[in-house]
Image 1 (cartoon, rainbow, N blue to C red):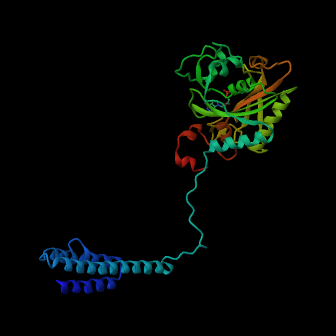
Image 2 (image 1 turned 135 degrees about the horizontal axis):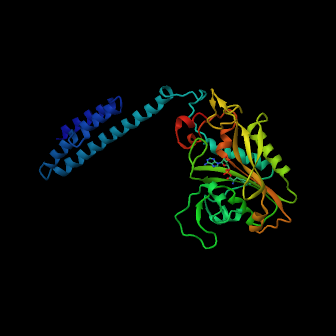
Length: 352
Ligand code: FA5
């Protein structure tokens, strides 16, 4: 038994030392030290010896096993070190080679337009605010000089919330226009005001120029002696900054219950170059060379009064434009259906 153990020690340590890589070392480990390996077999033999021989032989067998274990550990460490040393030649890299850029996304074009609009108005002293996506009837209509059952409300094709009516503020609606932000701002009572409210708005509409969820930007300037000239100046400044000097805008007389006088603002259509025609047909988007971007006017005294502001002392203008439509009219954008913006089609979005 002792000879056999000696023999195993010589053989196993030689086999480990000769292993050229981790796979060979593992095979040798299984052969000599595995559960069904040669060392285990000899250990079983020791267990079967007569009781008087067992302790001495057991001690010797353990010594042999310790030597073999160490030989295995030494070789494993040596192979590891060899491998690490070889990395310098097998796995070198040139840190000066330009890297591969990960694919980079970009913000949605509407988000981009919101940032651009904000930037232009902030530069001329307007403060960006945003108001809730749900609103009370009073803020959306009543305070804006549209009493209950007034037909002017129909224009806003409003979504009503399935929520209890408030005794003071009325029904809850999905904000149909950012003009309710005028009311919220005026009711704060901090005058003068230069506000630009950009928020989400909702209407029951869907076609080439309408989506059920869209954004509006609402300007409100309240001060002493503000006139239509200031309104025109601010809107012309915006149009020049956003669309470039070459585009034309026009103010068209209109009627809103919450402004007096009221206007709609059109811009010459970029899709058809302001001609109203595209390839022998009427322009799909504007049909007439001009596209309406929003409404504007001088804030009606009834609105100021409803919000606790004295119309004898203060006056001002307001305007509300659609962000999506405004963005679509940017030079070169050429989107011929507003609904593309919210289809989440990657092929469409990655064009910008
Ligand atoms: C209004 O919403 C008024 N609150 C604007 C206003 C503000 C007038 C302040 C006076 C003073 P109108 O319903 O026309 O007005 O909408 C304004 C703009 O929002 C439209 O010109 C258009 O650019 C955009 N818009 C309206 N409905 C939609 C829609 N369903 N999808 C996309 N854009 C829309």
